[in-house]
Length: 333
Image 1: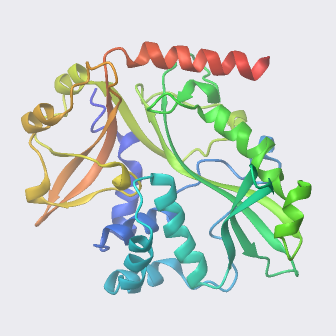
Image 2: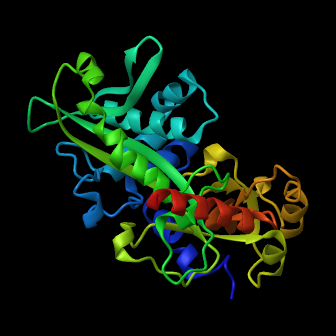
Image 3: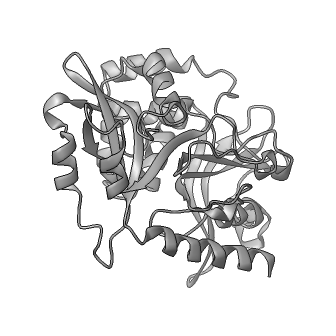
């Protein structure tokens, strides 16, 4: 079995190429992914109690594909927004892209509004406040782009079994924080001084990719993750080299700000299998973390992502299991 070529890990890339393959600008492609990829959380799952935002439910907004094509032909305005506040943080970059889209279509009231109880205490931050077209009110969106690897071999993994590549958080912990704290920010007394209109509803917009060591794993509907979420693989360096689909493809190591959309690269910017293995950082170092790579197929003068995955240090799974167990214990205590 080849993780690199497995249909579970190539489905979204095929879909994206069919719909948005003509887009060339990297920032526009990243925005296209934000706007058209499946939400990570299932809006119909009972556990979210209707608090999941939907980008495709925006009355009066022009068709996204036509707007993206026009933007790709002249992306100067988007480039200016990204250049205005350069960042190395993927979450902040994604906020810049989404804020540009919402502002362009007249839905944005304010974004990144910090709420302080006093000069020394920050209560929280409204990621996005949108005009509610149906009322003289605002909609609060809590926005996140997340990447998690499933470390567990359990038959029915839980949300806390999805661990961030840097082992800082888990999917379960992140969702608990959003739903139980961040979406309730407008109810805090300190927030009233910052709101000129009432907040009619608060919703989570969560995009991302989940990565699996076993492509056959299925998630229980009760977890609340969309069935068609963006998927990738994870493996060790030795497993990558031994994968039966490893040879015959081109590769790239993806910098963090290129993690959102499927990659499109010039052929000269890609790596052979041997060059990829040689170019991977020292995964045996004490501070080594997983590295995200893209497997690419050649189409004309370009290389198009067909799948993606994290190459992890040999001891990563053990450390990830400890992190997940700590989160599981904390969630029931």
